[in-house]
Length: 104
Image (cartoon, rainbow, N blue to C red):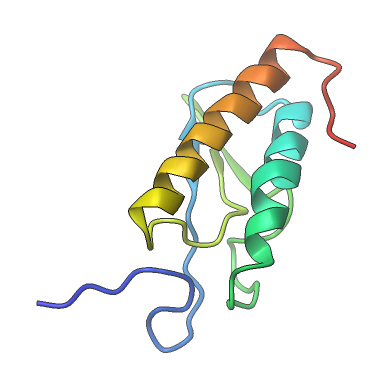
């Protein structure tokens, strides 16, 4: 068996790497996620943004919170996956504690 992960791993078709958060989709949280996770990762992703996923501020509200969908695939390496999860936690935790927190 062979498994392939990562942006455009299969026939150059974009795949996303979304995260689930069980908090309301506050705008400052979403902007912070874009600035500290979404935009930096797009620099290193070969995929083209297309379809429903991958645009800035791309979220899907859910009954339990929201799904952040702006990220390219981040499960292609264990270290990258760990860093994305830790960074996402830190960004959301900071933005939730400080309602005026908006990255510049």
